[in-house]
Image (cartoon, one colour):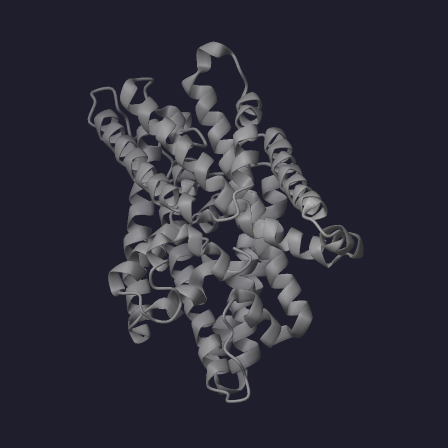
Length: 425
């Protein structure tokens, strides 16, 4: 996510088309869905439990609309730069940050993207650990134990330099997500249709005000896909249709998110867990879906950490000692030693993320924290800031007011949402 070009490995439909404006509408649609929909959706029923079904539904809809609007702001900013003859086109989010705020803007933007990438990677590991612990509950192993059991494989996979071979697993993981959602909805309907079901104890709005920003953070995390906005738009053959396609896609995703969160909470009520697959009956179909989800995430984890590795290695290769290590000697012995250093740095990163994941108390709390902090800043604060900076003089009063509102609300939400996620609801 640090650079859009890095994430093409997560979007197989872009591999044949690149970013030269040759992707069809169907390809772009598929890539938007792959960029946005992830494992966070399986935490939405818990978010509805915390906020209430009415507040949760409204929150998801507002988050979807705000995210869509801010994605369009990024495209408008890039188009503004492209219209200036002396300015080169901003290809990435980091490039846009540089155009708006100089070196500080680039560092800030890429720092937030990397932190978000780390957060997503940790969320993957937490999800894998909790689901495997649920599947193999008779072995009395904790979630942390399963996280470290898969780490050797994750380290080996992180050593793969060409990630194109792993890109199909991104689609596999999304298919498993859809199957898991379908299985959850099927069980939801069965529970709701049962004779013992009662709607009376399902809250429309939580009585605890802290539940609203907590659920909001989870919703923002579910819509996070800003790292690919500019790349997706520029990859489309008919770029003028991008905003309409994005609106249609966001409408569909928002509707699915709202219904999934609503029915998940209505079915399980106060028993709703932070990963709704943990509420499923312990039978072969639910175990198969959970295993598929875990397998897909295990193989897409190296794709998630690849941009982090790239930035670490760029800094490493600029160091004097590494350059001497890589270039000294007439044979390849020192070059291999330098490569070994890179492998060690990747292994340390994976171990560090696994250690962090083992200390996280719960999937829902962590996802809300990431959504409330880096995702909120990337999704709302930076786009509004860039838009005001580049197009401020040409904007109408209501457009300026809306940008300022989004900017201020994003900052307040980030501060309060972070506090709320840490102290708990």
